[in-house]
Amino acid sequence: MECSLPLNAPYAKELTVALNMTRVASKLSLLASPGGSVAKDDLSPVTVVDIAIQALLTCTLRQAFPSDVFIGEESSQQLREDQSLKDQVWKFMNEMKTRCESLAGGSAMSFPRDPEEMFRLLDLGGVWQWYRRGREEAQGVGYGSY
Image (cartoon, rainbow, N blue to C red; front, top):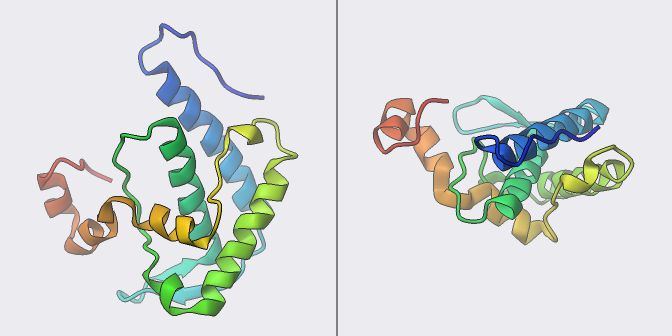
């Protein structure tokens, strides 16, 4: 069931896109097998699912709001350095696309066309640099709290 709000509601498009994509992305992540995980530079783990879902959400948001700035935790750095990890993430991305076609509201999702686009989406805005520097500096330039 897709969510929609009256067109005159404040932020109706933003809320509709956010609610629909969050519902679909959460279903996709629950359908996923755990997949592999790797340690980031700060030794915290990141999974194939984490990376793919971030690229999926950014792609969907960028399609709906092309002039907006996006914040994400992951970057393409590890994917560019690790062919096996890149292959796992891209394989899962394609599995999500196939599964999405059978989900109600799945047509609202946008997917990267190829691994290079996935890399660009992950790095969009260079936000991972802000994340590494810390929340205080990111808030200081207007990115708010997260």
